Image (cartoon, rainbow, N blue to C red; front, side, top):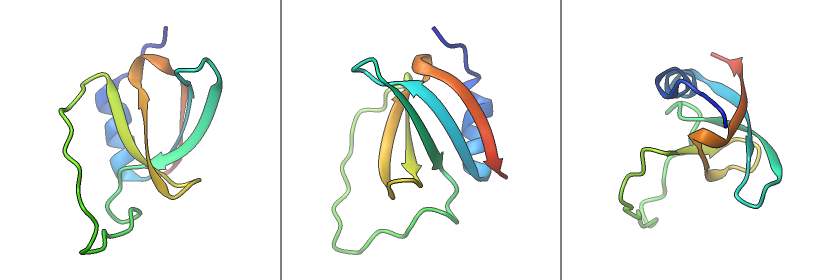
Length: 86
């Protein structure tokens, strides 16, 4: 089980691009470049609907720059975090 500082990870994601390696629910490993920086996330189209979900403190939703879409991972599945650009 991974120990990740959620606040530090979130701060890094807000500042730029981060490479996160984590274990997916199916047991495979995923390496994802992602961000929460408003400057790097495309603006929503006015016609796009927004979904609202109950927040889950165990899950981090991010903009995956490698697939240009929203993805998420569980904090406890994180293996490594590498700041790419800040």
